[in-house]
Every structure is written in C-alpha cells, then in structure tokens.
Image 1 (cartoon, rainbow, N blue to C red):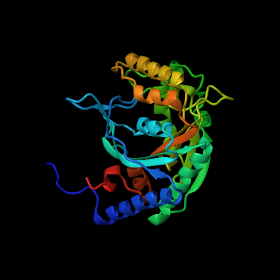
Image 2 (cartoon, rainbow, N blue to C red):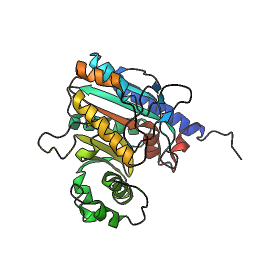
Image 3 (tube, helix red, strand yellow):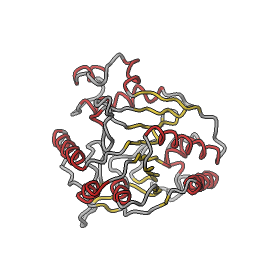
Length: 307
C-alpha cells in the first residue's frame, strides 16, 4: 500500500533547510553567481553508465546534470557560477540513489582541479558545522593506489584478471565497468568513516569531460570526494578542445553499442560553445541529498527528503 506520509520528519527537514542556506551563503561570500538552467536538454549524457530519461512526445531528455548548459554560460564569459537544482537518472533507486535528486554544480575559472578539490572539502566542512556534524579529517588517495590491497594493477589488468576478482558479477561488462564495480564493492566500503577522502587521477578511459594529465596521459585530471564510504562529488579540470570532445562522444557511443545501448545524440550547442572558446576552468558536481544523509548518519537517502 502506498503511503502518503513524508519521507523525513520536521527536524530533518529543518536541518535540510539549514544545509541549503549554508550552501548559498558559502557561494555568496565568495561572489560566485547562482544560475538556473533548463531541466529539459536536447541531448542526454553519452556515458554508458548513466541512463538519461527521454521525455515522451518531446525531442529531449531530462537533464542528468546542468554541465552542458553551464559550459555554454562559461563560454559566454559569465565567470564563476553555480547551480543547485533537480536532476534525473534512470535505473537509480535504492539506499543511496533516487531517480530525481538535488545536485549542486559549480565552476571556477582559472583554477586547478586540486584547488577546487580543496574548496569542495571547505564547503562540506562549512555545511557540517552549520548542522553540528563536524569532526572530519581530509585524506588524498590516488585512484591507482586504491587497488594495491586487491593485488591488481588497474591500468594494465585484463578483463579476465578483473573478472576473476568478481565472480559474482555476471553479464556484459567491459574493463571500466569491472573496475567501477571493484572500487564500489571492495574499496569504497573501507574508506575511513570520519574522513573526507579525495580520490584523484582516474584512468584516461574514464576521463568523461576531464582533461588528460599532460605528464601522465594515461590518467585524467579528475577527482571524486567521499564522506566515509559515500561518494559525494565528481570534479574535473575541464576539457576545452571541441575536437577531442567530439571524439569522446563518438567513443562513448561505440561503447554504448558494445553494451547493447542506443547511441546518444551529441550536444552540438556544447560543441559550438567549445569552438567559441571555453575558459580554462575546473568544475565539480555534488549530490546534496547524499551530503545530508552522510552528515546526519541517515540509513537511506530518502530519509532526508520530504518525498
């Protein structure tokens, strides 16, 4: 039987409101512009591990992130900006996932990804203090080093080697999917409970919209931030080359075909914006519902949401 009752109690919703206010205060103090962009986008995300929801009867998708719109604003020279709003992802429902969730995304012009990763931690600590949930340490870990305890070299391991480590996983999966599963099932749960863990230098095959490291081109200038074992944020030194971005869209569609997924149309407006010139910048997206869940120690993400 469907319950009409809210998912969170009044006290939790008050803390949620305090958290949202703390986020806006944080950016207002730093003079970062708040923007609002459309929920409907002409092209879904090409990443085969993220399902975009197509809107029936309309030529578009519910956004999985405002990233493409933000980069068009950045190319128009708006400078540092942020947005906090709903995004949508299919096949995501569970203790840590909701089909619709609140995402905070922001961009810093002229910043390195390292500087932005530090600001992410500053924001989290600011939010924690606003609701009385402080006491977190900060640690940095290279993505490749995380696999040492599993006895595998993630950049060179074959699909056969990786599958031997996860015999419980069946069905179609490429090396990146197997590495993602290994990280989520064997590494993430062991991250320190009272720490903000910055995991950085993901493989080039998982660069998404991040630049490759010029000194180590097998690695991407990408980072993720975890509170305990909960993944909160995903950030990049943003790719600015339209030719490389088109090639990555094409590569993603080839991977989608291999995995039996439909091809995703490219966002030509984004590519035009990159051609016009995206300023050197770093950007990050952070799940606000997960942040509240982690700081309050809630068992499920929906316990911090009204519905």
